[in-house]
Image (cartoon, rainbow, N blue to C red; front, side, top):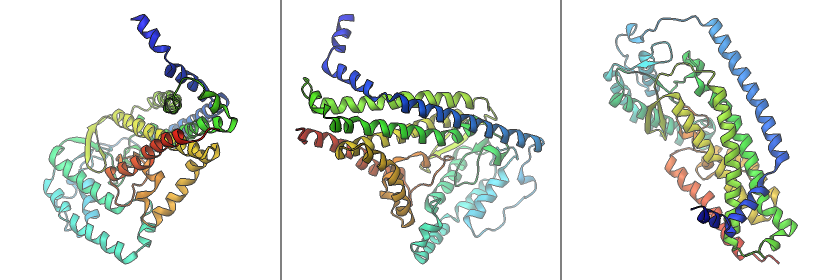
Length: 393
C-alpha cells in the first residue's frame, strides 16, 4: 500500500499541483488580510458586547405573555401585510418566541394574498421604472411569497409549538428586536466583513495565477514539462481553491468560536431558503448554512476572476471585475434587470431567511442558479478552451 501511495504522489500532476500551490502563497498579502480581519473581529466583538450589555442594563426581565389575551378576535383587515403582522404579533410571547394557535387568523391573512399580488402588479404598471427604485432593498414579490409560505408552513406543521421565526421580510428577527441574542447573531454580523476580506484575498490569488506566468514568460518554461495545458489549468485552479478554502475555514472557525461567547436562547428557529424550503433547527444550523453559502460566493468570484485574468492576460482585469461589476449590478437593479447581473447571481445568501441582502426582482434561487452556471461554469470552460488554443510564442 505504501508503494502505491508513493507512486501516486510521484505523478506529474501531483508534483505540478504542489508547485502551483506554493506559488499561490502570497505571504505579505495574506498576513495583511489576517491582521485586518483580527482587528475587525475585535471591533465587532466589542461593539456586539456593548450592545448586549446596554440592552441587558435597560431591559428588565418580563413574564411571557400572549397577545391573544388582549385581542380576542381578528379585525377585518383589507391589507395582507397588516393581517400578517397581526397574526405574528398575536402569537408573540414577548421574549422573542412565538406560539401560533389560531388557524382561522392564518386563513384570513392567506385569503388576502391574491389581492396583495394584484396590488403589487398595479403599482409596477403605474410606476414603471420607479417601481424598482422604490423597492431597491427588497423585492415585493419575493417578500409576499415568503410571508405566504411562512404562514402555510406554520399552519401545516408548527401550530401550538414554541418557536422562533427568522425572516428578513417577515418582520421577525432574533437579536435585539426580539429581546434575545445568540451566537448566530454575532456570526451573522461578523461574517459580513469576513466574506469581503476573504473574497478580496481569493480574487487577488486567482488573478495572479496565469497572468503572472504570461507577463513573465514562465508559461513557456512550464509547457516544456511533460504536462498538458488542461493539466496545468486544472492544477492552478485546484491550488487556488485549496489556498482560499484553507484560509476561509481557519477564519470562519475563529469567528465561530468567538461567537460561542453569546449562547443566548437556543429555542428552535424556523428558517427558510428560497421562500419555500423550511427547516426548524437550532441557531448553530443557521451558522453552518451561512458558512456554506458564503464559501460558495467566495469560490464563485475566485473562479470568475481566474477566468477573466487568464483570458485577458492581466492581473488588474481580474481584480477590477470584482470591484466594478457590483456597480453595474446596482444600475441593473434600478431598471429591473438584476436577474442577469453577475454580482447578484454570485451570492445565494439573500435566499436564506434572516440573512442580509435583497434578492433579485422576481427572485428565485433556481433562476439564479441558471445564470450562475452560465457566468461561473461557462467562463471556466471558456478558460480551458482559450488556454488550449492560445499561442504561447
